[in-house]
Image 1 (spheres, rainbow, N blue to C red):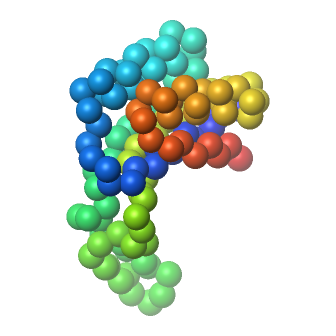
Image 2 (image 1 turned 180 degrees about the vertical axis):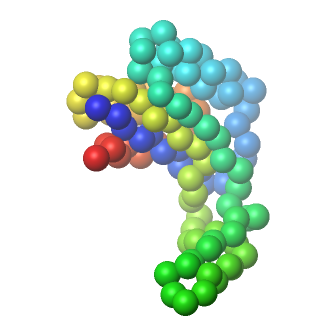
Length: 107
């Protein structure tokens, strides 16, 4: 089963060199265990643009969809046999990147 591990940033600052090295090591462990599918980091939401084409015309709005103190800063998509394993990996990833991590299964 695949899970999305979302990294939540509170704007406390960019990843330190140690956090980046720890995250790289976590990524390497995921790859070695065959649990790595894909991962990526995201920039701050400040330059985001929202497109809403549910009406007759697309409406384009500058800025993030939500104004919040926390935002999605990156993610992992992992393979795990069950939620317990995904939660353990999220705890390991949270420790590595020093940020909160939300776990959600793909349907």
